[in-house]
Amino acid sequence: GNSVTQMEGPVTLSEEAFLTINCTYTATGYPSLFWYVQYPGEGLQLLLKATKADDKGSNKGFEATYRKETTSFHLEKGSVQVSDSAVYFCALLTMDTGRRALTFGSGTRLQVQP
Amino acid sequence: EPEVTQTPSHQVTQMGQEVILRCVPISNHLYFYWYRQILGQKVEFLVSFYNNEISEKSEIFDDQFSVERPDGSNFTLKIRSTKLEDSAMYFCASSEVRSTNEKLFFGSGTQLSVL
Image (cartoon, rainbow over all chains, first blue to last red; front, side, top):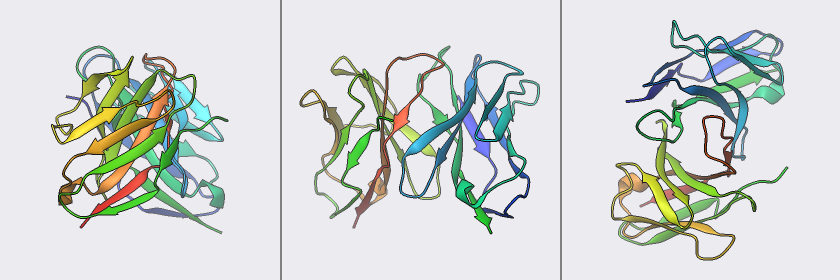
């Protein structure tokens, strides 16, 4: 079956530090990969996505590259801000077989200190 | 930007009681979903709904669960007889289309506590 594993949090960084949140996946077929973000008191929002191998998704300074060879989709940002404090969820979606719904990781809480 | 609205934000109930979680999806969306996240665990798919019927459900979505679109705007999740292990954050989501590129819009969730 499909599964997503992401690094446990919380991740605590100082403002302007470099961020990496690891995400690896197991899937049948050829999944699309997503990062969702949940700011305090809000719903999950799509942050970025990639639909095929070697695609790079990017948004708001965040980037993630779809690596089929390592089955990974690590989230990176060169310089985090306090406003980036949130919970980040890695997810996949495949339409090939099985469930046609998002499979999420457990989420990683990021805390950015001024 | 349009948003998915969920009510209530917090719900406390006694074990064995029925609860109804409410969601108002985005108005032109056709596909509706419920997910849940037990504290510290993964966000799990419960059910998807299209054209007034369930299109897919997970093994979690047993006979104690039901969904309904009672009118043109609301989408509800009912738990008939709550158990302690139903305590979780429940997220409603909706989307316009259903493909590998689908963009799901999520609500802010209902935190259900079963005592």
